[in-house]
Length: 143
Image (cartoon, one colour):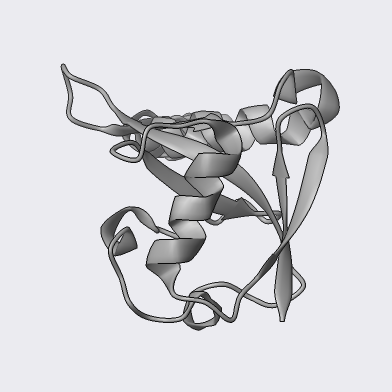
């Protein structure tokens, strides 16, 4: 049972899932030269973050959280001091060139409130436009 982790300069590393999460995460941090106090996470190819932040000290097997033979991108999890929100930074060099789809996914993950606001504004604008069109049609039919 293994997974493939994308990191650095388009490096791929296969890691065994038959180990405790605490050791798996420790190894990830070691491979990237991160301080062990920093938080990391993994994102699958569909953009779903695996939420390893709360499991940094878990004794559960990595296979209980990660899907065998899946590709994951290694992320650094940072906290925005002003808002307290999480920001995800890929631990890939030049991710916008090597994996351009990641840039948009990470923007959405790091700004979930803004993304939600954008969706709500878009729906409101469509409703307003639809209402105006209906009103204009009704006026036209009355003439």
